[in-house]
Amino acid sequence: MSDSLGKILLDKLRKILIPDFTNKLTWLLGAGGLALIGGPALFRLVGKVSAEFYGVPIEVEFLSEDRSGTGVFLCILAVVQNIAYQAKGALSEAYAIKKLDRKHEMDMLSAKQAHDVFMKESESEKGLEKSKREHDLEKIKELTDVFPFETSCNSLIAAADTGISDTFQERLETLAGMHHITYKLYDVEAEAARYELIKQAIETQGVLSSNLVTDSRFEDRYVPCFEQKHNGLRVVFYENQEKMRMSCIALIRAYQKLVEVLQEKTLWGVNA
Image (cartoon, rainbow, N blue to C red):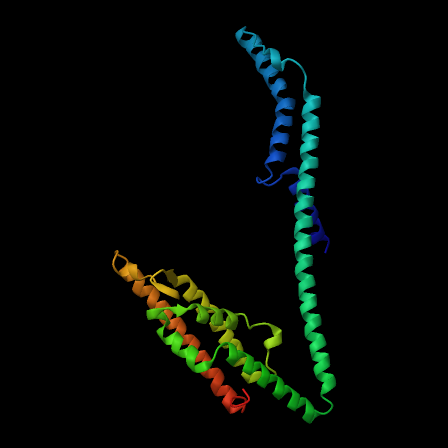
């Protein structure tokens, strides 16, 4: 414990005495102060050595006056400025951490309140299981409303070759954003499959957004950069196309796995 405290104090002292190079004002003030303190003394020493050994006295008028007091003041000012600079950075970092912690607390409080309401409404073990099932069916319906299985898979199959529509891009972004705790399923296996689907959706959305572009010839669509095939970038075009195709196939398979699990759990059907 004492070793850790000593390291922290040494690190703080080092930052005060040796500021980082982004703090240019501290370096300017400190360098100016040291120059005023050491400059005249150095020139006087050179003049004395020159006079004694070579018989040639060297004198510089504007360095003859002692300005060490001003130099010391500048050095002190540099230290004060550096401390203020670090304090500002520490306060900014602390504010950012506090803001994130506050957001996390609010999310957890919201989830806890929803869970408390859920538990109060479930008076028995049978009622609890029924409530869990109803909750899972509702969340599955929300997912399929955003990203219908058949039509979405059809769009994914053709995405690498013909691109995707603005509407499908929005649906994919919404699916990728459904990772929050409020979308979590109570069924453990179903939740694991849903998690893998969302995880793959995030990856596929990133791959498609990186390799599809807008083209005035195709209204309201994101398409592959077809010009690459005609301007010496054919290899790049087909490499990007293969990346998109493999990522889309992975998303289709993740969706199929979710459907299989939901069918085993009788959570996929009319109510879903």
